[in-house]
Length: 287
Ligand code: GDP
Image (cartoon, rainbow, N blue to C red):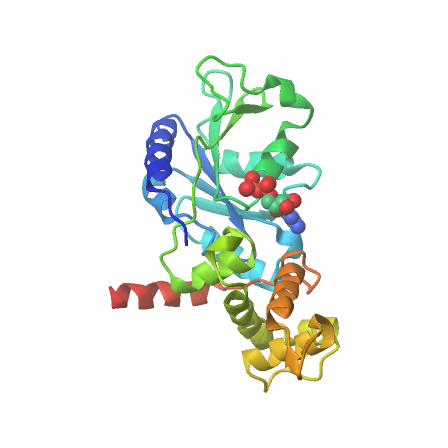
């Protein structure tokens, strides 16, 4: 898994500076893996600043599990959570009221609301920022001291959103998160083995979304098979044969990953709050 300490250091400094003038942090998460797409360093930097968690890509996540994550975050102090699809027509209409509840003393021309939008790559930050900009795009980035890296979007006369300065990389503190980030396409292709990641993904699918996999690949019930067994069956149906009875598992792995990412396999969420907490606890115990 690749790691860029230099960038991280600069980002950390820039975020720390920006947070001094931030009333609400908007943390974008991938609804298919909210725990794994959070950046733990960000949590440390945010401290007690009120936070709106946005479970983005809710359109391709499992709605029952999204509800669990919303309940989990909404129970945290100083935190609210909403689920959305960054390209939906009016995210600002959902986002603005949630922020106003988090910082009721801000608002009006004297004390405008200032929110900071953060998220690791691939959570949909650019999509959200572009949707928010909409026809107000001309108003961004024309304030002194605001560089290309840190653009300001005026969402209402007294409501400014800032894009995170710099790049926030996922920091993987739970082994399982690495697989989830890779499966969702949030880590560069060269940083992991596709077959290994597809097998991890299949374990989850087999346990919780077997019907969707069986339907997509026209398979007999897969519950009793091993993960390699399932991948082999998919390869037989879709990946072609390599000759001498061998199946092309690499090709099947690529198909599974691509179809999971595009939600051709249906709506899937890889982790629940409870699972994530137990991985964290196990990780801490091992330290
Ligand atoms: P960024 O790296 O966080 O800026 O992410 P992007 O905005 O570039 O989005 C990454 C990918 O996710 C792109 O292919 C987007 O089209 C897709 N995407 C972003 N938001 C959503 C969403 O709410 N739903 C779905 N289905 N796809 C999304």
